[in-house]
Length: 319
Image (tube, rainbow, N blue to C red; front, side, top):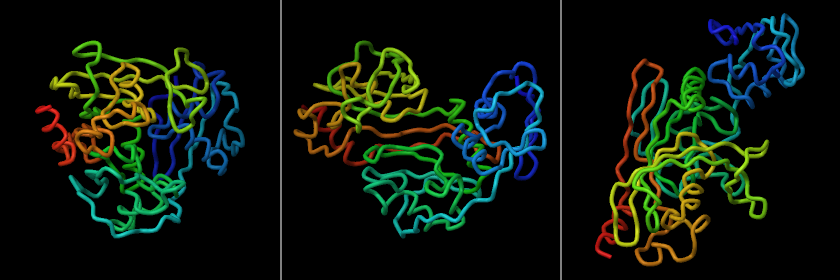
């Protein structure tokens, strides 16, 4: 194993390898030893010349570890972001010097991407706190995790690099407790359950993710737990807890069980609750998130169902 006493000093981390690390790739070994850094971040640092192995700048992420190296990871200061600040109202649930917790509305994209260059959560938080520019990356400053555009609810944003690494490490290590409320068609096969599958990009429809029954280099293992909150006429209200954090994970897993999220045209079908009750997006809401924050506290942040989802729920009870 990597020395568990790997030290952080200022904007550097020092990691020592031993015999148990022999034969591993450099980037893989450093992900295990450098708290809060993802494999893509390590690879970017290698390409920037910021990984120094036994006093020599490393040039290859795939370098094989011998098992006795001392590695210094140099974390550069944030770069200036090209994303513009926009004065967009935010519903702030909590804020301190390290993080911002926002109740994201449906329809808001988290960060700029193709087709959504403006009006995103990132644009809004940069207007709220310009010092966040460049935190965690130029294109996604402050972003620790994501919600789909039409999924509402709790999302956490880091305000400095230390907080970004601290929070991101918990998502990577799966110590964050995430809870969603989802209205699904029909009923799942059991009152409470757990779904474990591999998820990867759909080979025929690239906007979709798909279930795969074998783990490959192009798929990722995904686990979702659910429990029934209320049985309605044609629907079931579930509390859903994703253990992993894959793209569209909840939506894919519910569809796999034969009870797609109401209003989800991508993974359901055209005959959705939206046709009857005016629902214009999937009924999925990030209602609760429990996480340790940099000041030492463990906090649970909550969000009530938005009015559009409450209205659908009320109407579905009547039938």
